[in-house]
Figure 1 (cartoon, rainbow, N blue to C red):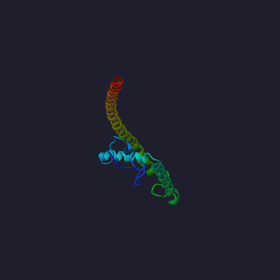
Figure 2: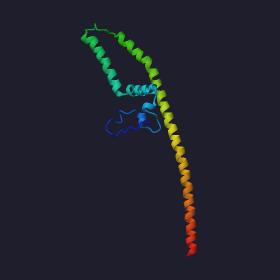
Figure 3: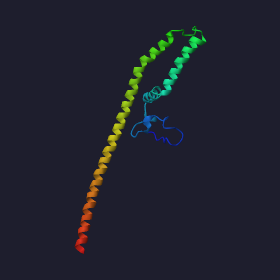
Figure 4: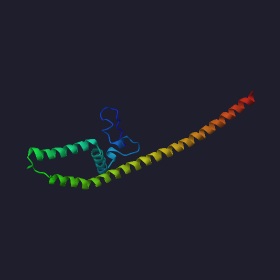
Length: 151
């Protein structure tokens, strides 16, 4: 588990993988290359930055081809090459979303296992404290009885 303190000024909480802040969830070097890639794709493609960049790219593509090259650019209207790229992106998008969802499920399972472990440990600790309190109560009663008898 990463021990990155997000308040040290070197990284903001938004630059850290969201899973690094959760207890019991593997992160950093503990992850496989595929898991790190899935986290990166999810964090980048699922952002407003990606939407803005993608929209800007589409606008620039159309502007350059229609206005700058007077519709004789590398992909004149109706933008056959752009449509091919968009179709390829749409075809991959489902798989990318499934990969990201599987990764999120794996993280949720790790977090649930961590919570279960913590709950079991807490339950054992509560039982021990309850036993100690019972012993303390019994001893206090005995001391009270003893002081009453000695008066």
